[in-house]
Image (cartoon, rainbow, N blue to C red; front, top):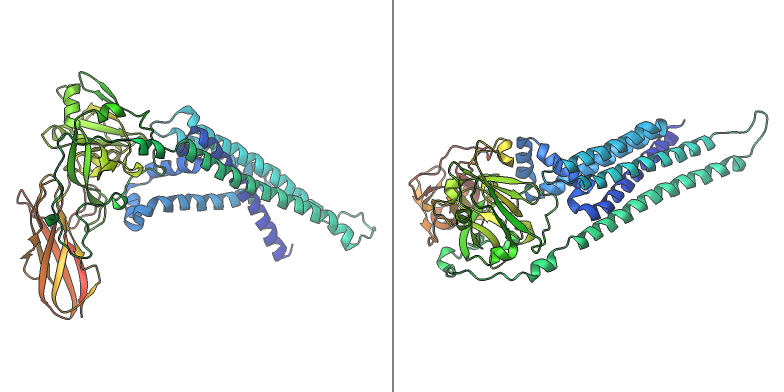
Amino acid sequence: MPPRERLLRAGAEAATGWAAAAAALGAGELVAALTGPDTAPVIAVGSAAIDLTPTPLKEYAIRTFGTDDKPVLLGGIYLTMALLAALAGLLAARRPTLGAGAFAAFGLLGAWAALSRPEAATGDALPALTAGVTGTATILVLARMLRAATTAARPQAPAGTPQSGEEAAEPTGTTRRAVLTATGGAIAFGALTGIGGRTLSDRRYDIGAARDAVRIPPAAQPLPPLPAALHPNIPGLSPFTTPNADFYRVDTALTLPRIDPRRWALRIRGMVDHPLLLSFDDLLHEPLEELDHTLSCVSNEVGGPYVGTTRWLGASLPALLRRAGVRPGADQLVGRSQDGMTTGTPLESVLDGRSALLAVAMNGEALPVAHGFPCRSVIPGFYGYTSATKWLVDLDVTTFTAYDPYWVQRGWDRTGTVRTASRIEVPAPFARVPAGDVTVAGTAWATHRGIATVEVRYDGGPWQQALLAADAGPEVWRQWTHTWTGATPGAHRIEVRATDATGAVQTETRAAPYPAGATGWHSTVVTVT
């Protein structure tokens, strides 16, 4: 067989695999419209992949791709599936059962992934199983048609019987057109069912109207507006309060849990005398409190962006726990999300007098879906992975010896206390600034301890105290400025460090985020012209 014909044949065989994969995924998406968007085969496999990924690789993904890590993961899954589908097509052309087996294996893998979720139901396996059956049937049909077309393309005339080129080519072209039509039909089927399933799912599980209908009551004792003196008016410096649209999002959810507040309920159970079951209306009828709080992610690198400050509104978590009656010996509060994620917080810290909330609003509006609507926990002093359960549905009063939450199972520090951090925001890294006096500015935080001082130094020289903006309390960051006098032309290195309100100076020692949060002084290099 000439190389060109061999290449065309291989392409046709691979195309049958792609068509079968398209049909399989489309069918799976259509069924997922009934069982939930998180049960779609690719989402189920992707979620399982997140759970099984080694921690160093997860940290690399967050460090490299930031909040785009999930699209990158899904893109990688689709690319891998495309390669495997092409291989299945090549196999099916020679050994149909092997090609079909690849799609059956994908269906079983997806079913296992769907059922491996903590809150899974038996029906969650249906989309993947449907995808497996559809892909298996499609590849068998297309492989059989392609083999028939290949056979028909070979000369079939008896020996000694002449046959014109036109007479020999006619059945071949017709058969190949049939294969092409069937392949295109399978791809079209996959596209239509996939788009249709996703559209039906979006409509069925849309909670936009329900969220818009929520009327959040005011706080029983509203906090005063934040004074302008908290934020130096310097271009490039982060706003003191982070807008909701800019608030960082780091979680493991490939699809956002969409919870209708009318059907939402929160259980408080475990080592309590009086287990509670609260509806969303029950929560809104609690005396609501406001809390200005800086939340940060343990995956944040030194000087990184995964930190933000907002005004939260919610019910008092300590008050509800006391109503439930915490039993002696309990030392951990485990929050469980709708998607099965768990966080664990030291119970003594929740009950030590700090303002810990079951938040229902941020910055004056109901929680955005991406940030936990209808309810999330907010407990100052800890990174989000041990304190800020989004899409919260369950609170279990237990002990550290009895249960390891999600990230602790993967080797992260058990308590997740926020480390003192500071960063330079102005000038930007590698900026070019004019010689003379240069304004340097940034932000520092040590949640629940507060910031006492911030110091800056240039090219390893003596530390100079920065000017701190007004202090809004220990639960929020402080912004700072410093005037670099007499900056001379050339490249220069600027460093910053902070001291918290207990007198502890931010350590110089560099440490990666894993397992207890990044440490070290943030620095930036600029060129003075």
